[in-house]
Image 1 (cartoon, rainbow, N blue to C red):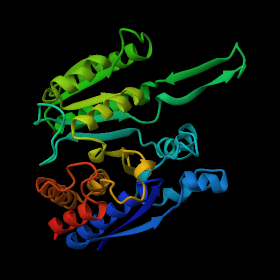
Image 2: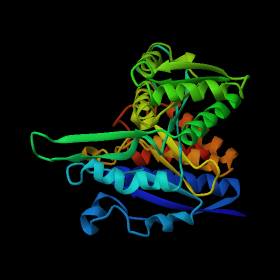
Image 3: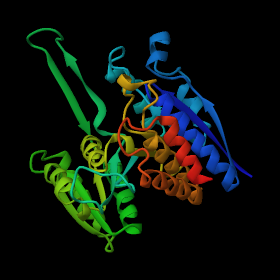
Length: 347
């Protein structure tokens, strides 16, 4: 029997609730599918930071390296720990050190879920560059607190980084509907984004079977709302991808359905899977968090591990659940009730 070792990082707020729910579903499908999952849970979080002064131990990265995958709940407690500390202390080091350069976020309406748009038949796969660009962390502040204070934030775009994320996007488009939207703002950012456009045109010659369109980010944001059914694969930089995928979450019914994968495509290190709804401290421990995004992320993890049938079974069970109206209205159904419905559909 195949066995996979999974690092669980529930994190903060509702992260614990949705991670526990996803794990119940994952264990259920594993039993039915003839493989095993073993979990090791780590308490790394903002609470851990308040106790130790670090978001994770010094050897945290090396500890995670030995796992097949990482399943994360949510990280953040802004009332106690600045988001800039929690993000740069946990998520970004994992993404960068493990070269998880492809952040994948699917956007489509599940059966029974009503989105805010007239359009219903859209299926967008957003691919966000995940290790450099606007979130490179290069820059600084001088003369802090004075009238002469200066803050500089430098975006870093490497040819290797841009080429690999675009190739990843082209490959995804090739096995989907054959359309790629490359997103920049090259009319205003005449160095980094013109460079991105040039690399896109160069690589397009290697993929004659993929129709490529370059969009400015503002135009693409409007298209996601006005004509989402016209889009297939969207590839964008770290910042633009971050923003566009919140639009994607909104049009698919809300952040409760927003799943993601942080992928190391060459599998030289573990990949990480997480819902992107955040820790929602205001509803933490009320038992009403929607676990579907975490469950969907778990399905993406199984797909990455090669258990594609099991991943498909989870998604069918999720849609059987939402088709019954369970988990389709924020706060209506309790976390454990949604989880139980998915498990029942699996069984």
